[in-house]
Image (cartoon, rainbow, N blue to C red; front, top):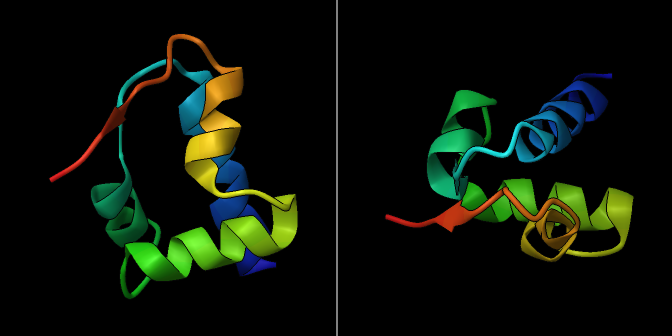
Length: 64
């Protein structure tokens, strides 16, 4: 249940259209690191979050 909530939050932030700092988002959601977030997301959606984010033209990626 927690995993689904976390991943729902990821898609909500993408839909909001604001830039996504993946490392910070992973930390905000309680993941040990960005790699764990990416793995969970890919397992559920079949693609990494950066590919999924392309569906939201206003959403941009940021990195540290």
